[in-house]
Amino acid sequence: MPVLVKICGITRLEDALASVEAGADALGFNFFPASPRYVSPEVAGQIVSALPAGIRKVGVFVNPEPEAVARIRKTVGLDTVQLHGDEDPALFTGVDPLWRALRVDAAFRADAIPPWPVEAILLDGPAGVLYGGAGLPFDWAAARGIGCRIVIAGGLDAQNVAEAIRLAQPWGVDSCSRLESAPGIKDHGRIHAFVKAVRDAVHPT
Image (cartoon, rainbow, N blue to C red):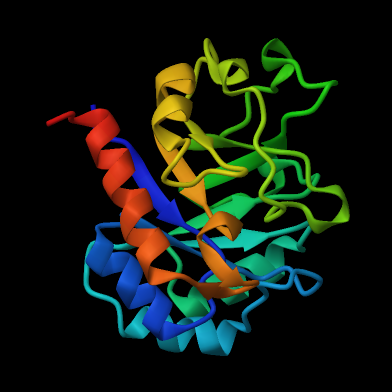
């Protein structure tokens, strides 16, 4: 079964195009101002306008007002909204598809996830005040048995993503900081290696 590949924290057109060339299915744009990978809606819109058809554009938000999400979604041309803070997805009516992120830490319980109206749950490693992008993996087996689509993130790279897929059996995988030479600056070689590792894990040669 195919696994969706998302490259997150895109801030530059050259990195977006390199991700597409490598075979990524989705690109993530971070609209949380405190993030080192923040990108303005105007710059994100310019990048999105240069992308080929068929690439999923995901906007990452942390505790936003629904009105702000609607405005940025329209300005940029986003396909998907990823809520990465403490939001109640039910407040974001009319936003579809919607992803809700959860941090997997000592308090995480898969059976306590609310029945949110979302396309997928994104499971991320602990990140402190950064709300993601810390490059810390979690126990991927914690993703097993969750009765909805799961995207796993947090510390994924070409060296460990095959094991993560084996243990978590996710619908999608998401990588950010492990594919960078500096925050917001992607290493194109790492992107290509990551996407190849995902494809090889799903369809071994």
